[in-house]
Every structure is written in structure tokens, then in C-alpha cells.
Image (cartoon, rainbow over all chains, first blue to last red; front, side, top):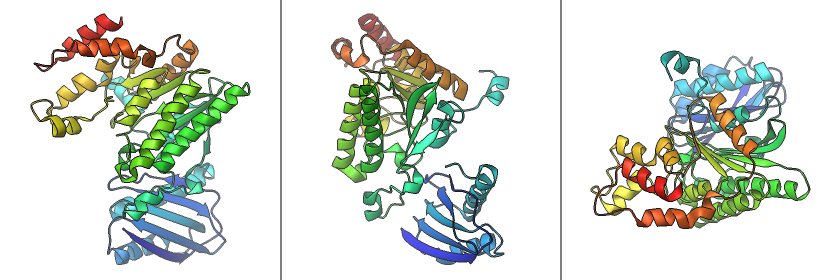
Length: 103
Length: 282
């Protein structure tokens, strides 16, 4: 198991908090909470060691533009593929936009 | 179910624990307690280099069911096989104890437990076992006031110490896909040999421990389709029936008498078991 941390530029604070996904085999859990405007922090806990560069590349693709709402994100990953990681992050943002989170 | 019904239904099995809890409570009343943002991670899994989940695989949801105060305790079967560790177990036991306190003060809070669990979390050993004992005490204390309704939808099912907790519930609802047993098939095969129980034979497993068989042998009360509305209606029906005059666990002697009559020299068929239990427990 490995713990990784990332930081990206962001927009206004997210509108609520939410959780998407489950820590099951090949899946992950994304917890998203509002953070101060301009900065998103991501703390990753992953079962697969040695993939820091892959996480960096994936997260840069999602957050690199710096226009997503600012959030404190916690990811608990049990061996999800990059595609699944991206979809769970997008799902979390979608849930916050639809319902203001509610979790 | 025909094809149209299968396409129209809202599967309960496919829902995660949180979505199951929300679906069982009246719309707009669900409030999660000790939720993921409290970050009650298992300290023990992390020490063993295993990834934790922020709610430790248990969702505690308070709300109304048919207008009555209800707490739903839903176990997430996809996280660590729904295993019961210190934190997840304490969440269930604590919620049951609070429901008991409500009843003592005249608030008739009732509980639904959604079992999707292989039993104790081996990585947390005695702490998990102690938590399961607390859950069992909580069920017995609460069922004096209001029914405690257990649901196992599958596909993990309900095993180990938590199957004893299931046996203590006032009512137990299953789908055909769910399984209920003290030891899981692989454990039986490992301990007693493949001649005793072949864990690869899915037909054998479900015919002896699946929802239909467990209802036919009085170890569960209702076998419903994998449809959220059907599960919810079955739960509401159990609460409407009220506290049963005799709980299943009060009939332990009757079950033991049936068990004593099983001919262990040959493999029991599902029909043998139904006949025996049907006679002894009618």
C-alpha cells in the first residue's frame, strides 16, 4: 500500500460534499469536499505500489486545466484502472453539481 | 420475472450499501450517521497494508419507514467481503443500542439490518468477534420493543457470526440469490473434505443454503424477487406484523431436534431437508 498527495489549481469552492464508489476489487472510493477557492488537494491511498507517475499523469489530465471546482479529495483505491479512477472522480463532481452532494 | 419485468425492475442487489439504505427509507428522510466524512477508517487494516474505506463498510442511516422512526444498518459486501471489524461492528451495535434507548424513552425506533457479510474480519480477529457479540446483544435487546428485520439480498449472503445475528432477527428476508449459513461452502470443503461439500457446485450450494431453501426450511421468512420495491414492501410487511410472539431463536430446541434426525451417512438432498424441517417446525 502506498500513500500519495497531489495539488492542482482550481476554480471556486465545490458546492457540497459527496462520495462515489466502493473500495472493492478493481474499484475505488472518492470523497469530495469543498476547499478554499483556487486549490484542489488530492490524497491517494492505493493498494498498488510504484504507480505514482501514472497517478500524476492521470490526475493532471483531469485537473490540469485548473477550472474544476476547488475540493479536498480523498481517494481510497483497490487496484482500479485509470479509466475507472477518472470515471469515479467525474461521478463525484457530477453528484455535487446535481444535488449539492447530500452525503 | 419475465424479460419485461427484469428490464423494468430496480435491482436491489446491484445497489451499494448506501443506495440500499436510502431506498428502504421514506424519500427525503434519510440522514446518514457516522458517515464517510467522519473518516472512521479501520486502524487495523492500514497496519496490515490494506486499503481502508472511510465508512469501514457499514452505512448507518436514520429516517422514517412508513412514517415510523427507523434506522437502517447496511453492510457493504463489496468492501472486504462485508467483513465485520471493530469500527463497522461498533457502528451497528451502537446504533442498535441507541434505538433501544429511544424505545425506553417512548420513541418506537425500529431497525433493519442489511446483511451482506462473510462474518468476522479476520484481520481484526477478537475485536471483530466482540463487535458481533455486541450486535447480537443489541438485536435481542431491541426486538423486545420493535421487530428487528434482517435482509440478505446477495450475492455475498450472510455467514459466520453474522449468520447467528441473522438468526436472532425477528424476521429475515432473502432473495433467491442470497445465501445464509454458518460456514461458507469453501470453509466446509476445506475442513470436511470435498466429499462432504463440493464448493464448486453452485447448484448444490444454492439448493441447500439459498433464499428459497431457507424460507422452505423456516430459517427465513420471505423470499422476494431482486426488486427494490419488492424488498421494501417485504420489510414494511414485517414491521406491520409487529414483534412476533415467539422468535425463531426461541425455537432453537425445535431446530436442534430436526437436525438430530438428519441421516449423516448420506448427502442430504434439499427435499430431504425440507421434509424434515417442515415436519418438525410446522
